[in-house]
Image (cartoon, rainbow, N blue to C red; front, side, top):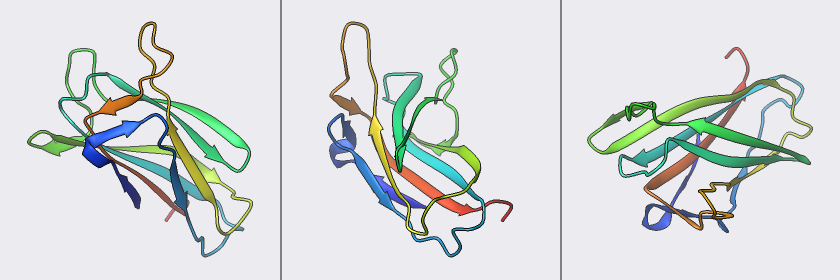
Length: 131
């Protein structure tokens, strides 16, 4: 798992996360997992972000809290960790995929939330499917 830790636990909208991977075999299918760490002061039920892989852009709406206020994932104290399987059986075009992630949170009349607070880290993992 490759992680990006946020300075002052804040994911700024201009902060694009860049992840570089080196795959042992680019001819096999891979699974793609995401790990989000946040604290319980996070103000929203979800997290919107973009994943850019080659020329493909996906918008992800990850629910991290139930409507009744119960946090998803696991944790001790005020920190919660959510593992999310983003895609399975992905065939990358190169043995060195470069993935970018950009937060895309909006709220009410705001075009973007510039400083998303209570975000501790964002992690990505790529491994052969069925491993």
